[in-house]
Length: 127
Image 1 (cartoon, one colour):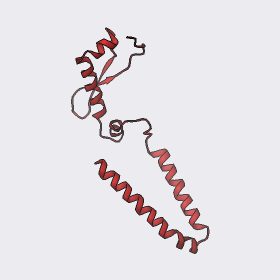
Image 2 (spheres, one colour):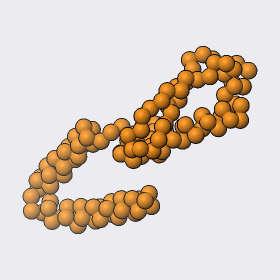
Image 3 (cartoon, helix red, strand yellow):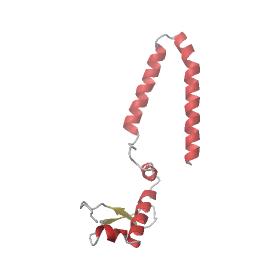
């Protein structure tokens, strides 16, 4: 799905650049400053749309991006699996001793079962 999205995005970028390149010269000949007002207005509208309607994605993993845009479950399931593996191999007991990090249960809305949320302990870890 990612490859299709990248190819579609790249194709749209090339097509839009081509359209702007072809239409700018006739647009400027017809209306001296109207072209710049038009492109300026389109840019302002696009900037406002991005600022107010798109969620912030800085610092998120690909799995968290899936959850942000509606494909929930992967990041939480990976986190629960990671916590289980750490407990199974004894890493959690080695690092935290008797004071394991808190695990809180979250109800899953899509019927995929029980998922766990990992909360970091605020104590410093010393070996």
